[in-house]
Image 1 (cartoon, rainbow, N blue to C red):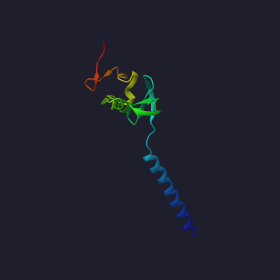
Image 2: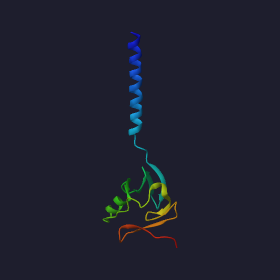
Image 3: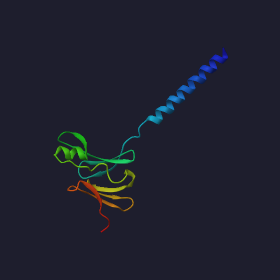
Length: 120
């Protein structure tokens, strides 16, 4: 009888620990706001990447920067950004960013791509 109770408790403990561990392993990391740009724009760290979100007051909705341009009938490829989220030091405008390594990137709307423009 004692063997049965101990086995039951041990089994329950293993199942609870396994479930807790599996639950933690499968939990997606939370997105984090790491900066602002322009009026109504935020930079969100999503895993290793940064995503630009624009708030549109007329619809009261958030859209990625590419979705916002598409709404205005412009097909852009701003995302993904040219650097990982942890490398973004500053971005005051959606198309111009400074990295922690001192690189300066500018988005060219005509070529529809990011360019490392170097130092002045």
